[in-house]
Image (cartoon, rainbow, N blue to C red; front, side):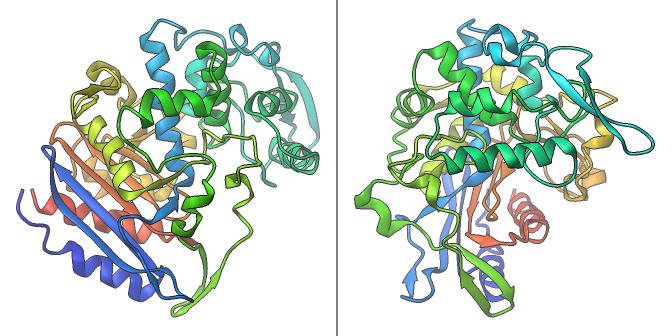
Length: 384
């Protein structure tokens, strides 16, 4: 792979328009072919982005959670087609909110149980909080109550969420939501360890990911990148409202969005996946299981609801976007390229065929991912 000469000016252009700073690393066939840090981790103090900078990776936590759960699948501790209630009994006899043509809402039993696979594929009927459906509104109330009562565990969260009727019959639609947070509860149940302990012992320690965690230690707080709200080009406002869960007093470990990490740490995780499950002699997960993770899992009836415009040409695997149609995506990447992104604009891409991985970090609301990510992908693949 030749030097990715166009990536540095691209990162510079991002910082000119939006984030205070950003960083990117690319590995090909286990060799680092690009790494750069642009701009500031904190605008006010002019602290630069460096290899030590720690980022909120939000939904890039989901890829870690799904890999962790699949490690337990490889040990025969559950099957993907198993009903979730066999492990988390609070999900027995799920109910569904149904809306009639005249917009009357009723609650009736679900047509079937949530399968473990439905958690991975976001087809469970569980949603995020919001205003788009009665389920979203009730999840919002539930989360407010949990936060008001103080810190709560993954298992407490799962039991409270299970009381909220689903948005649809499990398996019938794709809906982005709290499914991977419930996977954290499943991991606790079948492993006999806390979710964070399992990740630490089974993934972070073997991969020497020393700066990846749910709670930021006091001696590393200075390294946390500032998060900014974009007002207009050249005007950023610091956002300090989002960091409560990262403090040592908080118990909740969100598999859907709670991890902090560095560019180097997450690059090690991505390289492991690109290398077929191993890195520096440490095997984390099997090559064939990565094949399963990165295989489009959406059934015909679920496809219409997987409709995010910037994921055109992608399907959805066991917790990751999966490239299925480069022509439709307007992309020069491989069929089978996979990954995900985070709320503040972080992004990971893995291509086992090319043994290629890339990680991009920034901390900005809104994230402008529909602008940055396709350009990063085009430039990286253009160097092959």
